[in-house]
Image (tube, rainbow, N blue to C red; front, side, top):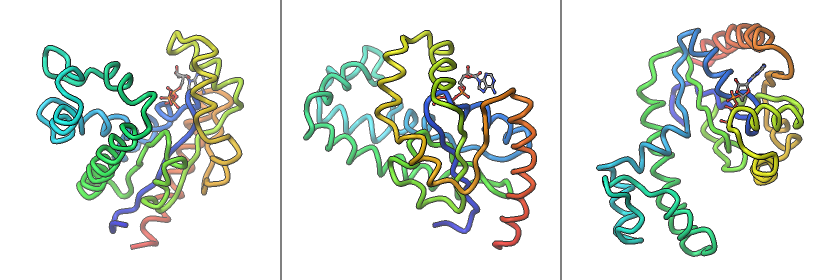
Length: 203
Ligand code: ATP
């Protein structure tokens, strides 16, 4: 672990991670977003994309040279060996890029926002873990509305993620996002103060 104070933030689909990180950002806290990192490591010109094209061939690329995600998904979906190969490539790249961004972070602590923090054991990179939580029916309703997805699609994603209980068991702090955004903002403010105390005590 680096000498930086890293606060992992996670939650199931539609629980309110983006809403919570936006609130931490208002307190000038650096946010490292795993979804963004995962896109960056396969961006045009990246080592990740070059290795994927070398392994799977150019039909996993779009005409402009960027990754054809649908084609890649197709290639690994029913093939565990290929899935394993891809994860073996991407996971270290993502992890290294996260470490770089953590090292570059300038705020008193930084937030590492990772949807699958618990599932992928990335809690080991964190000094503290914050779980954004709301009832599953609310996750479902908010995600369906936001993504214009079907209930079944969101339910399938929820089933592929850790259960609410497993996630909560990994939490040092829980942000209850079952009410208004103002209610969430008030909790983030209190937590921010507590984390500032924690990180200055740990130096
Ligand atoms: P994902 O894992 O899918 O990226 P997420 O955990 O980042 O989701 P958000 O995108 O923050 O979740 O929230 C899901 C949806 O619910 C968004 O449309 C957001 O505006 C809305 N939302 C979040 N919190 C609240 C709240 N307290 N009240 C009402 N709507 C909310």
